Length: 109
Image 1 (cartoon, rainbow, N blue to C red):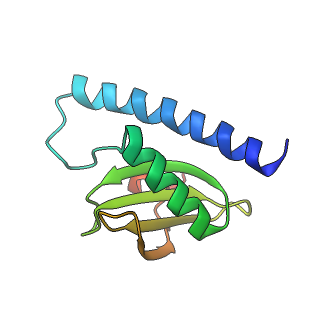
Image 2 (cartoon, helix red, strand yellow):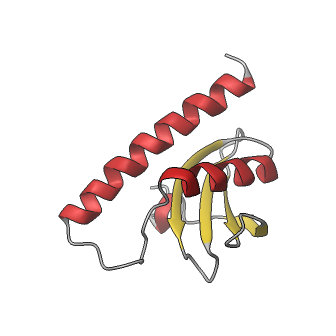
C-alpha cells in the first residue's frame, strides 16, 4: 500500500477510534473538556497538520486543550516512537515532543 493509502486508512481508523471513544466518554459521564477527543473537521485539520509536521506515522490519540494547546495529536512514527504535536486554534504547530507516556498518557505497558 502506498503512503497516501496508509494515511487514508490511518485516518479512517482514527476516526472510528475517536468516535467510539467519544461514545464511551459520554456514557461514562465525561467531565467537560478534560481529555475530550477531537472530532469532525477539527480532527481532520489537526491530523493533517500533525502528520505533515511529523513526516508521517499513524495518529493514535487526539484531544482538545491539552497542556495549554488548543489541540493535541499523538502520532506513532514508523520506528515505533510516539510524538505529541500541539497546535494552536488555527492548526499551526506550536510544539512537538516525544511522548514517553504513550497514547493518552497511559504508558506502553
